Image 1 (spheres, rainbow, N blue to C red):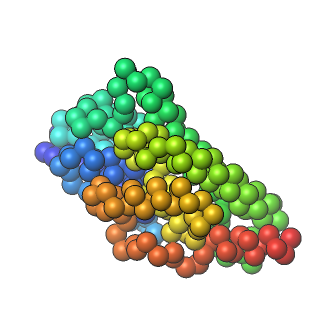
Image 2 (image 1 turned 135 degrees about the horizontal axis):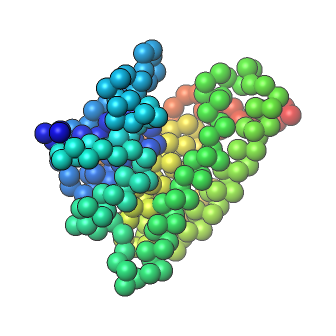
Image 3 (image 1 turned 90 degrees about the vertical axis):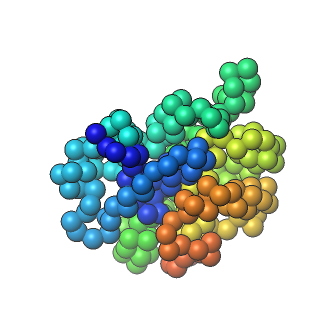
Length: 234
């Protein structure tokens, strides 16, 4: 049985970021235990960690009573149900707002999946991309633009992404958006979404959970610039 609450996380991982942000929003005391995965052996593959999550993926939440849980969106729901104050979901008396918050939290994962093929540029560089992978990257580039238009329209309606109150949808979605910005995404053409991102980044939970060693400047290489250059040569 754990003596204290622990969040096992990978620095810069969208999934880990979501859980750290929600835990800070809830005001929960926890030990953040960083796992290194950029060198072998990966710390997510140790027998000790695999005993917590046989899939070998972070995040994992371990409660003081020994309860262990993986999968970021499931952990967000668990935290809300076990620690309802302060609330991060609208009440049942507001079914429309509750439905939006839950749906938008889930949809954030769809946006992350649309972006995901661009990561191969980060891993190998455009010169090493196969023909099939190139098609997937170009599809991801246009897909991200469609996603941004959808989220920007939502950001025009409410202060936060699902309502005027900060919710679990923001814990789920903001790390996706901020991660893509880190990889070179510009929100210049999406002013409502840009304003939303700046609004959320100033929250104490966003500051506390922002990946170690990162800044809000774009990193290099700029994956979105590389993808556009790839599109221009096709």
